[in-house]
Amino acid sequence: MPDSLTVTDNRTGRTYDVPIENGAIRASAFEQMSAADSDHGLMVYDPAFMNTASCTSRVTYIDGDRGILLYRGYPIEQLAEHSTFLETAYLLVHGELPSASQAAEWQHEVTIHTLVHENVKTFIDGFHHDAHPMGILLSTVGALSTFYPDATRIYDADQRRISIYRLIAKMPTLAAFAYRHSRGYPYIYPDNDLSFAGNFLSMLFKMVELQYRPAPEVEKALDVLFILHADHEQNCSTNAMRCVGSSHPDPYSATAAAIAALYGPLHGGANEAVVRMMERIGSTDRIPDFIAGVKAGKERLMGFGHRVYKNYDPRAKVLKQMAEQVLSVTATSPLIEVARELERIALEDEYFVKRKLYPNVDFYSGFIYRAIGIPVEMFPVLFAIPRTAGWLSQWEESLLDKEQKISRPRQVYLGERARDYAPMDRRG
Ligand code: CMC
Image (cartoon, rainbow, N blue to C red; front, side, top):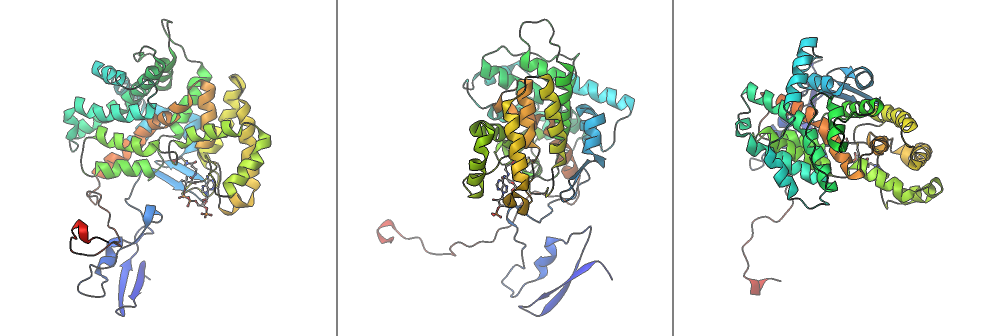
């Protein structure tokens, strides 16, 4: 039996064979199914891409029912334990783990591109003191495109390569500058003797000491957080990256669009929303009231639920354990008790069980960021830094995919058909 679907259009009685490839059928196969000469064939209606694959990809694999996440085939738990963020970024971009010389070259290239043009400081200075750092980040990343006009040559492999180095390297610098601006602190330049995570901590927290030395546990924890956030296949921001990239702007502009998509509280802004929610709940005795409000549809339990995971998010598993470890060496947070209890109650509650709502990556990450001393409004920014590696891998894959074209969805039009313009005195 060939892998195909036999479809009968009951309007016409005609039957069609639609091939099944890789567990999918092509939506364009339905175009041929029309009931009258005037109709343009059947469309597939799928608001919010609930069951539509918009691309083929070889970057990240998720099995949401079994709680599995693989980058280029490697389980996230193994990468979190054995890899570093920079090595993982190489893996995402190139498809294979680097050899020693490839790793050294990659590290060198990313490290030497960490500085930003001095003018960047000038326009960051123009932001209000309480501007959200995610707003600053997305604007400055977009602005980078004006500094590198050659980046528009997206079909030149060398240009793509240098844009990838620059974006991965400069993201922590811009993120740290956004934070320093909000505090009124002087900007700290990158320290190329430090690791990727260590350098970011230095740019965030260095004051008057000659050299900032991050605590090794904190540096390691941040690096693992970066690994866990580096990619997550076709989510809202990755889709924004691919969609905007499909009209062929430079990658800085496409990355700015991806950052904007990540900003929302249903996506990368959820880590910030989780901590604000925990602060509002305040103590374990107030959890039952809060849960009752969630079940009554008044609000959502932030950090819970996922479009794809219908099981424990594997990233949340690593983070839960890490939060306990980090909090044992830093000041503990009274809110971790609230989180543990909230999780326990939710996982037993019929509302959450029935809907397969489990903790996601954002449920515990905020506790670690807070223990490290990172303010809550920086949390989505901390998501954007590592995700840049994933966005760029997906962007390049999309550009080189011969099947891809400019993204242009169809619509099911339900509005008025043609009618004559009415002057104001004749409108009802
Ligand atoms: N709290 C309470 N109810 C929820 C939640 C939640 N966090 N998430 C989903 N539901 C309910 C929802 O009300 C709906 O119930 P019903 O069938 O009775 O209408 C059902 O579960 C299905 O929800 P949905 O909104 O149709 O699911 P979705 O796939 O469109 O949404 C989601 C996925 C992540 C946006 C959603 O679960 C959510 O809003 N979670 C809270 C925000 C959050 O933690 N986001 C971070 C996601 S992980 C990081 C990332 O990759 O962005």
